[in-house]
Length: 498
Image (cartoon, rainbow, N blue to C red; front, side):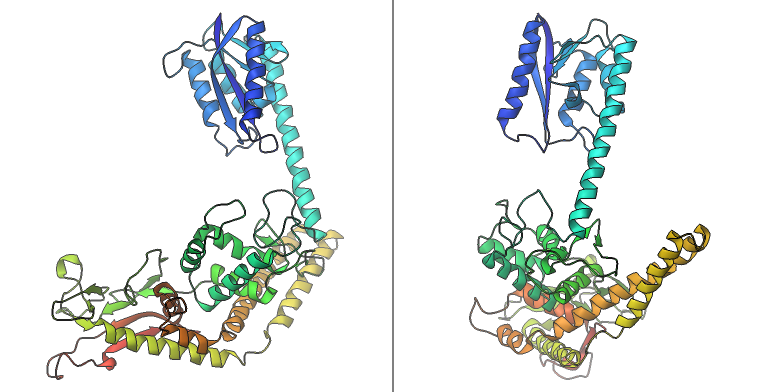
């Protein structure tokens, strides 16, 4: 009996359970038995396309290495391969060449599919197999083009995407809202625009036992994908671009929307044009890193030491939280020199938290009041004029009234201006949405005694991050009276610009 291995691959459009794989291997074993071979091992790649260049089929690669050496990892000898059909083995010429090279590395190797054995040592057979792989690749490309064209056609017709899992917020028909899920999504979008972080929302959903449509736990990544999807407001996006009609306006889909276009643009503006920098020790700024930790104190990472070193530069180190035996409250203090600080500054944490909380709430209330009178976006006419220019230029190029050189020289600047104005419109929508936030309720919940109603630390920190970059705490200095007396004038907030 000649020892061989069996290979099977189940694609995403086929059966996903073990029955399908077992069926293929059963057919492979039957083929091997008819030829007097024996299957000593089986290799299976489930839901891994053989046509995509970026997909690594681990089992296929392991089998190729085993064929080249003539033995499995446990030392058992093998002399060939049996598969159900050849295009389940390879669909790219490069993979076929590697497979044939490995199998024919030594003499006497065997290969068979459901139709029978093939002599891969024969140049004619190898050439036919290579041609078959090329044809299979061409067919895959045709299928991919048909799928892309179908996605585009459905999008232009306003139809929801076909296939895949049910989108969260809608029922199985993908058009009618699931009221419970849609309410959660709408509230999450509103809270995110108001300043609540993704981590805080995800933790609340996890604690409430809310699952995705596939039954998995929500993560910040999955929530971000959900909120960035323009499907929420009835629009459609393909390859990162909104699907627009001939008039340049987004096509409205034939499904119920969860939020308004203005709300989605406000959410998207945060993701695509998020502002925020930290103040470094030298006074320069750097991008604000994402905050994934569950903080126990309100202002850690926001507070900076303002003590001046002997060389005239500011310390600028982030203050840490410490506790002293004779103090009930926490202390914000500069770390020692061995940890990058100066160790020469400390301040009562409860007093600092109270003052900065009031300052942040006042600043947010001030911005909310000012933003309520923003009115409609003043750049709408400018955007329409640019879109009309682009449309006219493309029509002139299509009808050959202008040359290729002129078209490709003029179109980049117009498209760049169009992108800038659309981003500006999203930021404007964000300002309007934030103006609609009820700051009275936020202030009440900030100090609420009810654990369930009160904003948690992460929510408060999100509002603080929305309002300011950092707070420099200056030293009391000699001759300024008792060090135990809290002086708010020594706290210097660096506010974010509107």
